[in-house]
Length: 606
Image (cartoon, rainbow, N blue to C red; front, side, top):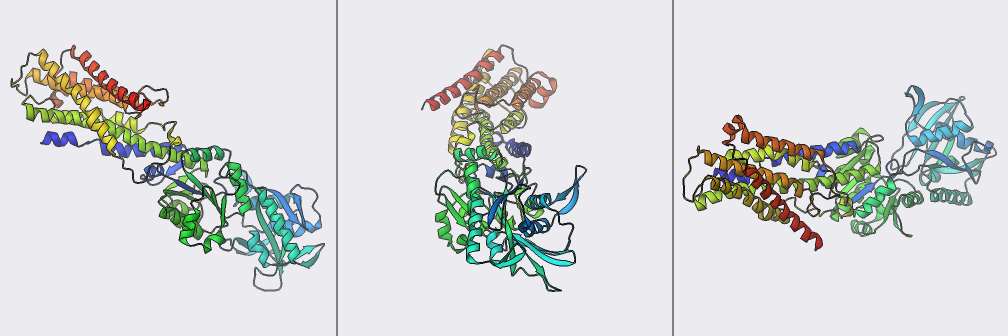
């Protein structure tokens, strides 16, 4: 009873699974994906949808001013051709920020948002209006979509405002041209909107700038502003993203852009990176999303290509919840404090390591060390590999349970000497099998892994095909190998059926030792056939695994120590058998591998 119990419990499984997950997190960290929660490694592999930010994740977050609009004209941001009518625009660009002075690599520099750095650099490169003192600030938030500062300059107080054109233009009542103020009429507003859409169509991120002079001690108010102009920023896509996007498509993973940018800007970038390939993708602005019912959102999410633009953190959360209600496994990126609820709600929350806030990182399951979308795809590949690797070493470990169990059943049913002792079972489960199983857990991703669709969320790790292969095929073959070696040694010692052997008899010790050695040798072959469920054991498609060779070396060393050293004999109840038995064991083990390779060949041809 104890023998059957020990044979059926894979004692080495728990440490192997844990170490396999830990090794996967180390590989992910080398690919710039830092996993904070160990179970997230496995969940990554079943991801079906990625909701990704645009700026800094799909793009490089290296802003440069490309175009400006003032005095009714769109102009290049070159340092020439700016007249006095550009002064309001340049003054707002220079002062409307909350950057701080700092040092980087021993040089003085500005620290803060890359967009504000680009805006300040552009303004100072054309005309520097001197230092101003910040009196107060109305900070940016995702609902207002703008920020303002009050600056004291040359004895006067000015309010400078920048933000999304939709958020700033309704607050403007006039423009400044040739030093005089004009009313901002409908015709001018239409020209501004046309200029904005033209910039956005080129993939530029557009900001509207406005200002007003504050009289006396009047409190700052974002009202009755004077329109200064528009600024268009170029933020180029990351060069790795188009390939990562193609890998997502081939892997059956849907990517949804969720951004606060203008729809035209988002669409232009989406086309550049291969996220959108059709003429009419679904684009849902945040205002339209706010008015939609949960059912309407779920229907909209059925679109093959969909972008959410001008969304708030709350609306981002709604998208995540709708996807979860549809049964999707959702990964979401975020960097701000407001993104924390969406990161928590997602199956996999992914925070930005460079631009992300501490709150976002605490809420996330994974942190991107380089803020790069391609690192998410690499992490998903590793997550898929972990699931497959666990299945590989599950097959490997469970296979040896049958040759450990059969000797006890044969002992009871057929009244033969016990072919394997309990301590010898533990020698396999906690000794010789451990390192090769870990090596299978450290296998690099299969080249075709990202060409398959995500596995179903309800798919069990221990599936019936795996159990059938391990127990009813490989296990029975390996049991035949072990029992053949056992009876071969008894035959050499002229044992006859019905003879009773003392547990200390040399022939009995040699026979059990041969049975143990046969299991170990068959497991050495088994570790190769378990590397892939269909490909040949020595396929050129199977990546090299140096840890596997190390594991096999340790496994062989351990069995030799158990067979040939006095300490091994005393601890495990073994005794060296005749050297003529080794070729028989080796041929039996190779035959075991040949039968499995034949099964794979039949499976491939089907």
